[in-house]
Image (tube, rainbow, N blue to C red; front, side):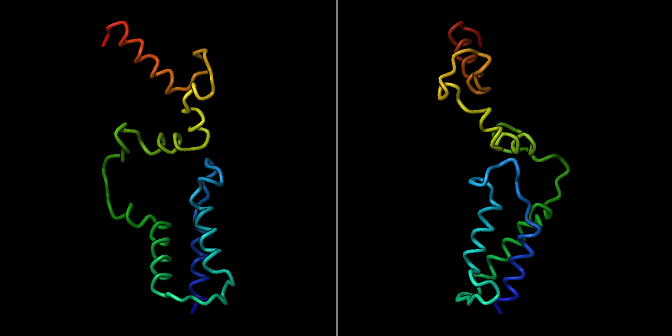
Length: 136
């Protein structure tokens, strides 16, 4: 019985995309591969003690891999994420390792000139300057 579940897990892993914009510490594909490796330590010979839990985990991964819930909702307008109203691509770029580096607060890096300051630091600095000058 474990052999069919093991093969199903391997099929899911083959289809699961690796997010190259994120390092191994932040990519969910790496975590899923690690967890499946821990679950099926002996491969097809692994003894599964809780078959229902294993089936539920595999079904959940299958649903995520196939975008089941995303495909169930047919939206005519693009999806905007969060309070900033950003589209998916902007959120993906902002959450990438490169995007997070660019968005980091420059004071952490002890940067003083505006050219080297991060985007967020420049915005925060402009807001402070506007409040000091009395502009709204």
